[in-house]
Image (cartoon, rainbow, N blue to C red):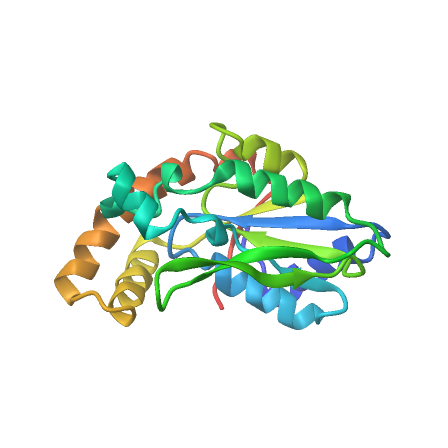
Length: 210
């Protein structure tokens, strides 16, 4: 379904105004525009109604990935702390006005590492927008996180657009053009195929571009 940003903001606002904490998950293949959409929703709704919490804050550190022999495929489903993410989503779902804030990690692309307690989530904010690759995955503890989400949207764009975005992103953070192309068409593509297989479990599949 092709929806405009205005239409998606209206749907997110309805979740925020339903009278209790709601968690909106946004998923899709690498380069589909998950983060961009999450930012757009949070910006449109404002900090009183919405806050962003990314799944990428649960990347395993580079040191741990190296020790596990997974550094060369960072971003794969087994390079995240899925149990930690599920536990955070549970805490966020249970929070009620008057509770202390919950501190969530963030991922900094400029250093390619997660940072603990990077964002404070006030219990007074009714909508948490969380985005990431594996929100609909059926392995590990990903389903436990999904159970706590009010809705999950799957964002999709044409593959040529998505791959071009990925290559540009990799170049922006230090990879050579050849490295960026190999990564986008290699590890990223393997992940994309796994994620694409989960789209039918989404509450909404949306074609969207900023």
